[in-house]
Image (cartoon, rainbow, N blue to C red):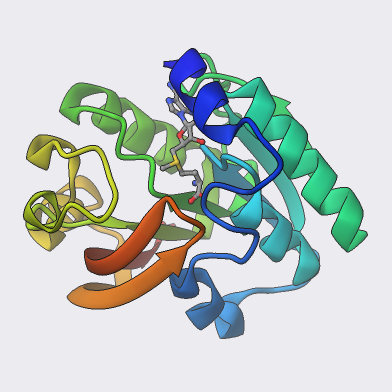
Length: 201
Ligand SMILES: C[S@@+](CC[C@H](N)C(=O)[O-])C[C@H]1O[C@@H](n2cnc3c(N)ncnc32)[C@H](O)[C@@H]1O
């Protein structure tokens, strides 16, 4: 898996570009400077670096050392601090109640069992009242073929997310189609899910 992503991230360009997912920028009003954020499976860093640029104190991780090197380079180029780690999500230590915000964007390499463990980790590591920003593909994306793993079982439905985060305050749950252009990795009409929720407590 790492070799696959290392190869995809090799070369000078940024596979998914250097700008954040549009979903994240739409959440700008919810961000609090100084808040502690975790960007999971952050690839080449476009999302973690953008959050750091908003004044958040960002920790990130990804399994690809090549991706993490590029994330560090992007943070340096933008002049923002980024505490970036090489780690598989399976090995990440989800420090309890440590973060004010968790951003999870396009980590749909994870099949349902691993996804459930990741969701548990997110719930553990967010502080009570912490904010979850989740963004990914919906199952009809498989037919669109413009990005993503091509495995419907890895993709999100709103029902799945509302069940996984039952009891959380859902601020946004949207299933929609949009044209996106994120590097050359995600290009064209895409079936997307935005999910924003607050951990109870
Ligand atoms: C589609 S990319 C998205 C990257 C980033 N979130 C973004 O939106 O630009 C999926 C990412 O998951 C990472 N990944 C794959 N398997 C992983 C694993 N087991 N643990 C952590 N990261 C993994 C890849 O290295 C890659 O960066």
